[in-house]
Length: 287
Image (cartoon, rainbow, N blue to C red; front, side, top):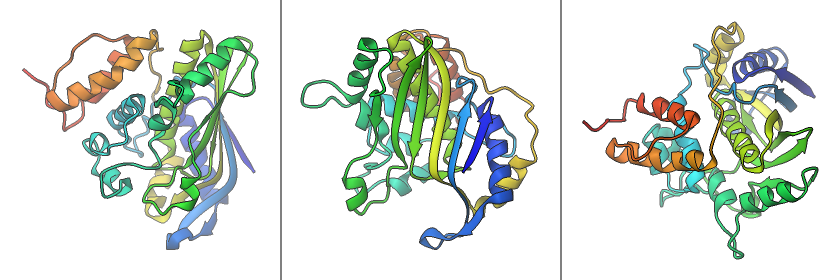
C-alpha cells in the first residue's frame, strides 16, 4: 500500500510521480508497457487547491472546466469534449456516445421516481448529517459484461459529514497518473464542494483510493519532469457561493463554445471558470 498526504493537486502529482518512478512495478496490461503501484490512497487537505499549474504537465484548465460542465448537464455526447481535445473521440462509440465516463449522466439523470442519485444523496445528508450511506455509484453491471471503448474507471464517491465539514471518498479501479489524476481531482473536488454547498456544510478533506495507479511508458519523461519540480504557484480556486450559479455554468459553457456569447453573470467560482474557458484556442468570442 502507498499513501500520500498532499496539500494540493500540484503537491499530490509531484509525490505521486516520485513514488511510481521509485517503487512502481513494470507490467503490460493490454500489451502496453506500464509502471504501476497497487493499492494507492491519497488525501488532499485543501480541495479548492485543485488546479494543476506544474510546467511539466501542460495541463488544460479549459478542458477541466468543460468536462465539469459536461457532467453537470448530464451529457453523453462526445462532441462537447472533442471541441477541446479530439482525443475524447477515442472513448466514444460509433454514435458519438461516451458509455463509461459519462459520470454526470449517471448521477444527475432522474430515475423513474423523478429523482437522481445526486438528489437522493443530498436529501439523505440533509436528513441525517452523520449518515454513512451517502454514496454515488458510477458503475453498472454492463461496465463489466459489455465490450466498450470506454470502461468507467470510477466506482463510487462517498460523502461523510463530520464536525460541520463534508469529506469525500472516491474509489477507482484504475488511475492514469498523468492523463487521469489531474482531471479526476478537479472534477471530484468540484462535486464535493457542490454537495457541501447544497447541504450547508464546509468543505472537508478529499480522499482517493485506486486499485491500480500507473504511468504508461510514453509518459515516463513527463513523469520524471514532474517528479523533479518544486511547487512554485498556487492552483487555488474561488469558493462556490450559489448552487444555481454553479449549475448555470453548464449552460454558459455551451453558449460560449457554440456562439462565443454569455447570457448571465455567475458567482466568483463560475466567472473564474468562464475565464479559463475563454482562453482556449478554439473559443471565438463574439464581437
